[in-house]
Image 1 (cartoon, rainbow, N blue to C red):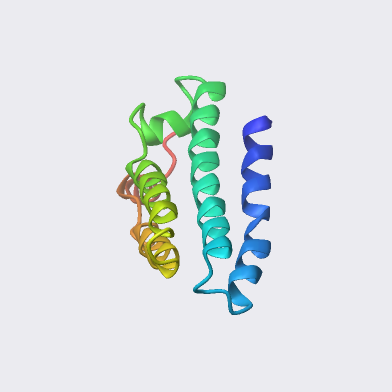
Image 2: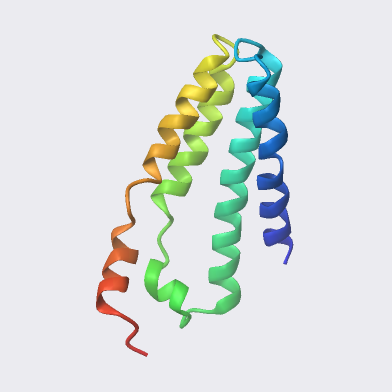
Length: 124
């Protein structure tokens, strides 16, 4: 329950951060850093939620069968990119938005494990 609440809190901050950056503060350090922090916390909370769901539902759950016990490379990569984007806001604030946009493009690539599962259909 707490992992889900943390995830919901993190994604509920997107309208505030996006609005602040969208008011014409694209070159300002503060709004860009807050936006980068919101993206970073959303990625961390998503990974925490997935790990928690795997643990709570047990080794025989459909989620564990689908993803296995390996880490989700997209989630871990997104956390690393979001952290780097926050640091690069010190050099040039728009780099945060640029790197976060590139990170979001990672999520446009379908997960092959899910695709294979959907093509095979539920076996149980």
